[in-house]
Image (cartoon, rainbow, N blue to C red; front, side, top):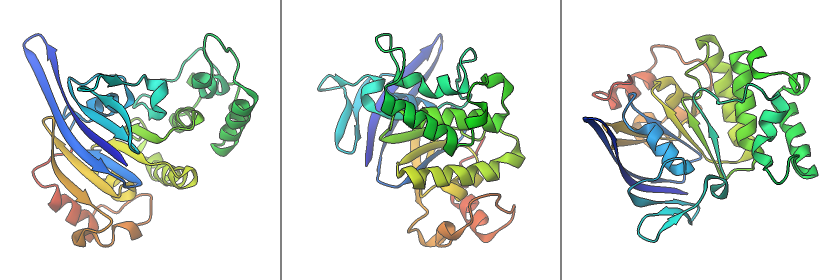
Length: 261
């Protein structure tokens, strides 16, 4: 269960943005859906501990990660959260293996412990990266870079996986296959996922629940598991979704007035 109730204010000269969101879900795969600039990424950064809210609290499986009133603010490593950045944020000077291992080392321990090294090798094999373990990120395709970033996010054995627009940087032809791979990863690792997207296809293919954002607020919640309007959603095969299906039309109707861009 992830329980988020946070508020913050961002100021940039004369411009300002206020985020005030509240949601709780035990869904295996939840999506934060809405246009760019609606506050989705700020929410993920607050959950991960990369941004400090001005008020509120964040709980993960009953454990308090942040509570403004009680003065609790766990560091990112303490939160045990895997984060897949939109641009992947791979270190260009490190090899694939070193990128995956990065969160398992520190200034006090330069090399991962034996158990951690075994986990890295398992992740390299699982994501088809073993043959390029010594390569640099700039020699890899977009899909391969995403797999490296996903393996790195899983290396620390996180309690939840946060995905910031995981398919935005990919060729449209790759998205169907990688959606399927991501669904398989979630099932194999049995880890809850919270994904940012502005693509209805991502929601249809992967999400159990969608929280719709608009101007720093959640304006609608859609449950694709039990909602009568979306009764066929979980039977949809993960992958490319036809442009005109009853399910897609139903989702678009539900999201009417909430543009994806």
